Image 1 (tube, helix red, strand yellow):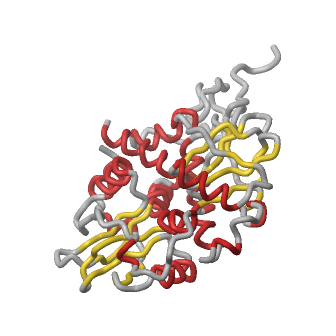
Image 2 (cartoon, rainbow over the protein chains, first blue to last red; image 1 turned 45 degrees about the vertical axis):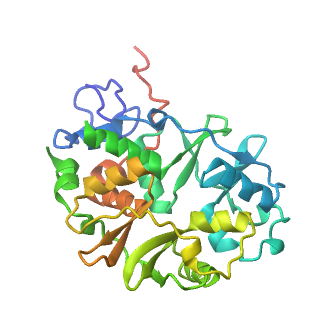
Image 3 (spheres, rainbow over the protein chains, first blue to last red; image 1 turned 90 degrees about the vertical axis):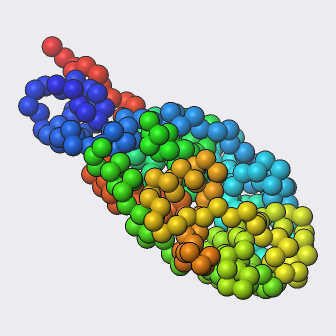
Length: 168
Length: 155
């Protein structure tokens, strides 16, 4: 008997999957194609984009130029590849004032959001949607098993995915 | 079609429960609009001329202006985006997703027949709608099943 959630083989009649702990009794036949896809597909299927990373010592000016030049909404602040913070255009609005002279030479570590939530690329898309909604995150850095950041997904990637599913 | 797909193609964009937008006039100073966005913790303001929607000013514009140290004392009209893609109240959720996805928009105003903006739909509204509409799918989920044991151990 295969688990509908993770595909592991289980003994007939068990209540919970031995591999992932999900209920084996749940009938998913009523779920729509989009729901089933979001349960099956993983972050890696979104083809996460390359992520811009900077050191905590990078200046605010440097980071603002990086965001503008690359037309992206956030950078990850990393030390030896491990994310220690994130800084987004929302932070530009909320945390910086209107006078660049007051902040542009300061280190980005003064303004970043520390300890950002991250996901591994094997996480299900449904889980990413839940995490983004709960935390009001627009971006989630993707890390490998050692915690090193390898990419980033945004709410736009989720919408693109949904749009493809609607179209098909 | 069943479940969420049925909702996406039959429910209206107003079912996304969009918030009332922040609305300003084209003649307001850019600095005062940025201050208003910061104060209200909002990511965008709709800019009206004579009560009709004329443009949108977002936090991405704030980033661009602060990065180049632009003069913020000038009217918002000089910096707003003017090619505003919008929705009608009678558009369905799926069409909002398509417009956002294909145009790369994070926010779409809902505009009435008189050209007045009545609401602002955001990508966060769409995510929340998804989570609300299929809680079983979303809530009862382990983050990853990468380490699943595919075979039973032992004899």
